[in-house]
Image: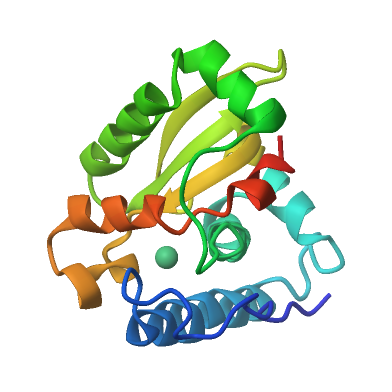
Amino acid sequence: MSFELPKLPYALNALEPHISQKTLEFHYGKHHQAYVNNLNNLIPGTKFENASLEVIVKEAEGAVFNNAAQIWNHTFYFNSFSPNGGGEPTGDLGHAIKQTFNSFAVFKENFTKASATLFGSGWTWLVKKPDGSLDIVQESNAGNPLHKGLTPILTCDVWEHAYYLDYQNRRPDYIESFWKLIDWELVGKRF
Ligand code: FE
């Protein structure tokens, strides 16, 4: 199977001023595209040649996992945003966040801290566990919770390529902007 770069659900300048067109041109147009190209070059002749992306993320290791997971993670990340995002989730996800963390404010504080303190490159995830409860997990590099049997609900990309053009070394400022872009109606459907 040959993979393609999924279309962004908004224009390249739609997330400004929080995430600039220039960042998306590189982050989506160059980095996300490179993971797609790499995976397409890696899988011919392997057992994953005809596998779905999700199966590869769950089962592969090494370079095949890294590139497949980076495709999956970026698609999931880019599909969490809206120019009219922000606020708080309602419905089942909003209820589950209050049950697990006591309040949205505590969840936001914990997720922000996990994102700010993740050493090096990686992803912070809000996940649903098999028992239906929520958790926040840090993953290095291409790490993806599907690989551990968890259900991803929300993710923040804290690789420097996600924010360096707009915020340089100020990862906390990027995370603050991240919250203003979340489309909770869309994210809530993942729960
Ligand atoms: Fe990234």
